[in-house]
Image (cartoon, rainbow, N blue to C red; front, side):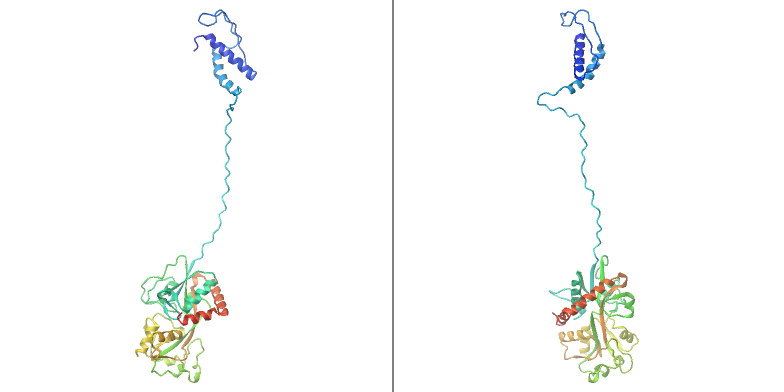
Length: 385
């Protein structure tokens, strides 16, 4: 507190007066002055008007900050901005609408017999993978469709198991798609995110229940191959160039004096796990001939050349290819007329619903035949190029 109460009162009066000047309102306090005292305080009687001392102190405390704010700023000084900062509005772009991205098409894997030259086989050295007529025709057809299909060589029984979403070893299954025999080994690959097809299949009654087929891709002619010294039955020789009786170009005949009757009692080589079409399969089951299984057509030709078999059922192109490469040209001979002519197809499991892909594949093959590409691929494959 000031040692001079009167001085404090005077100060309050001055602030009040300043407040009146600044705001044009307020209640002033007049003050009479006495003579000065020795201690510097006014002496003599004082007449107070207006506010009491305590109220003056309260006025001082309240009015001083207001007065300071109201006074004009000093030269060169910027007035303090007492306004609350306006909230900043950040422009946020609306999130883009989620686009529907269709799932990528399942990868396409097409399986081929790895040991059926020149139709399909596993390449070696600098040309690994599936090679032969069927893989090369299929690869070109899918290329024209803009599809990156993988051509996979595999043991045929395993390829059939893969097509049917099963696993089987090399000792099981049939070329017609029936799975039998010892089940061992692993599938060529899993099925998640994949479309699995197989190429080089014959149509049989059982397969029609399981699979959808393309149009014929090629025709395989099944012939009998005999030792060079053997006499070819007339029903298979076609004396005078006449087609054997009952042969219609699509299936074997089953009556006496026909190619099928000529097989009776013969010990013939077949490939383990293959179907030879409904008619020959039924004749085999009925015991019309004695079937001796081997792992490949090459093994059967070697057995025939060595006199260990009466003959072997072999595809025409396969016989021509193998006897030259195995050096058997003078040791085996092929009957002029086939036992059967069986178209081969690309197939998918029916549950996989690949009808549109099969129809597109057929159209692509037709285009290849029209522009000569089909014939060039077949010729090149037959020459082993």
